[in-house]
Length: 549
Image 1 (tube, rainbow, N blue to C red):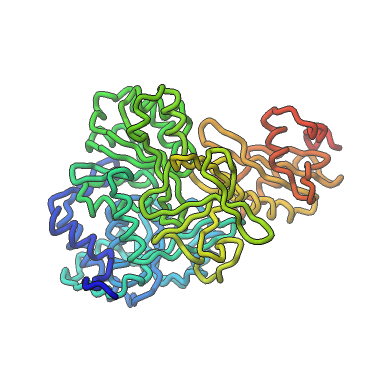
Image 2: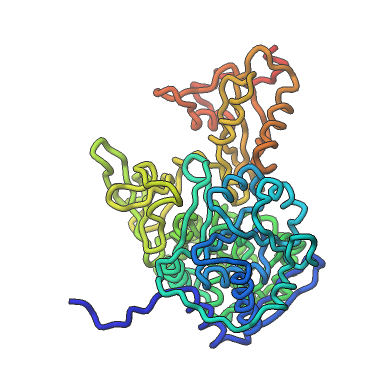
């Protein structure tokens, strides 16, 4: 028997319409490159989004077309977050930190029809534009030149009337690329339904807990997994939004000047901002919560924020494939009487699955997967499923490497889960290094290093770093032909293909790289050696190329 409810599609147009009808006076504030603040209300945003929809239509954008953005956190980018999916096209935010080579591959696979470029990144964009010159470009805040088009000029000439007509909630609305298990770009194609449901879950009181009284600052870039869904969650709740632009000079000043109550970003942002926030403690009194993701935040920093600044730290975990929120760590009522050290230990975990997300720990066997207990001790691969988790990658058939036969997504993270459901990530099955919240593929670096004729073996590992969380270090075995300039040569080779922050901090040359029983590089042994732990494998002596000669 079926129920007697309306079959009403869940679309982002509902979020936009609700926000602007009920919260029309709420503010969107953007820090501009010249240091001034640009402000307008939801009503103005609504009109501009409709004008933008007409602009896109006039430019020939049709349902299902992929429209790229190469932009920072600005009001124009926020307008694109709504206009593109609400007219039926697919928003494709490009990660400006990736190299032109990587982005070219991504743009070609996505078959982007049009790209919107932030004026802050024009010089940087030129290297990419030379490789994708067939794609039309619209620039923010510039006068029209040659065949290029100015965003504001287009909006000023456009009609302000537009009717949304998304009838199928399973229509694609966004495309984000992740490094994937082995470092190759993999697209995750979100639907209106998945993002709508993710928005409802994110706004639960024990998740992001946003309300119309909040002022939300997403420092997490809008090209990172849809800014963790905050552009949608904030507007659905009716919160004011503060957008930091490309490079905010002072997070503390921005928080103080705009009355931010909730902010979100990776741990390196909050580690760097802490001294300044502490000095301005009296001016940031409205800040009540910081959402942290991308990598683990040190317990000492969590403690400092909560005890010194009175700011609640909400430790989160997720993935691009999960839209991205999967878990969030908050203390339960039963934890309030625990010693402080135990509280910080719990808060440093990745947290409990948010409503709508199912998790399991699994160990791979010859017969499939064996589910492991939630006892805080058993270590297994973390697997997930939810209405907002991908069931395949864009243009790639599902494989057992990424998805199980019974419908679970294999995250590649190794974890424990305790009896209360708190997840603790203990290792990465994926060969990814997390530096400043960005993913660096060790395998991609190794593959490029091995292209050099003087390199016999290469292993790249992530070394703990106080500022960035992790930094890559390359351990290599050279041929006899290598000279003392080999480090500079390898660095130059990598820079030609990868972003600067991917480049290893050190190149360490050894006679032999430790191996596992099946002949693979033993990265655990390498890490133990490099971090000073005594092991039986320490006989693999570390030396420079000149010593080798």
